[in-house]
Image (cartoon, rainbow, N blue to C red; front, side, top):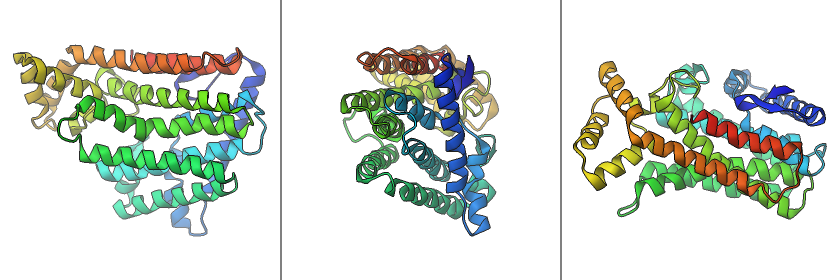
Length: 336
């Protein structure tokens, strides 16, 4: 048994293990090749986050989905590179929008250089992903374009906020379906599609990826509040301090709005205060950890992970299916 990929996913089948490890190694080499430029400064900026590491969750899903067809088909590794390049590009842009200073344990590109360099480097990565896509055929280009549209729409919806009368929780779930679920769905789709799996299998793995992607983000939301370590890749309470609306906070606000309990209203007021003050931030974090909204957010995470697992039911029993199921369990485990 070898542990590979994010969350310590364990692969118990030697042939599957070999395929997944070989694929992930090839993706890593492909990422370095795709981020090279004749201009050394561009290479440094483009490889900044590649070399910082990361879970490589999306390429891993490509490799596992490919097991339902020919896992050695020529389009599989390039499509894994495409989804990871696209993800990396969005991180450069997100860090500018969020004014983030750290990403994956290193200074963000905007902190190391400036916002212009970070935005343009993200654009460079999108361009390189498109170049690789062009060799994968028009259907791959169409799938990626549709997902990218959803991703950007989700980002715009997040920035604009819910329209009048829209439930903020429903709005948020739509946002992360676009921002996170869409690209993870593409990872499942590309793996199956490039391997030559039949259309029914492609659809199943696309649906699985969408639901798992939402569960993945909701688990991060829970971890931001619940974790005492750096499991989430950032200091606990970072989103809380920065006023980023995550599911536990939105659920608290919804409960306060509906029930007007004094303790809920007091916590909302605390969250709306200046949480750059360490003592106030610690108080807010402790109160959110003890609030029922956190457990409600955990249940939502579990629900999406269970939907992802259920989507796999029609697939044949095999080691790859077992690994995909284990990914669902791993996401739930992260959320506690």
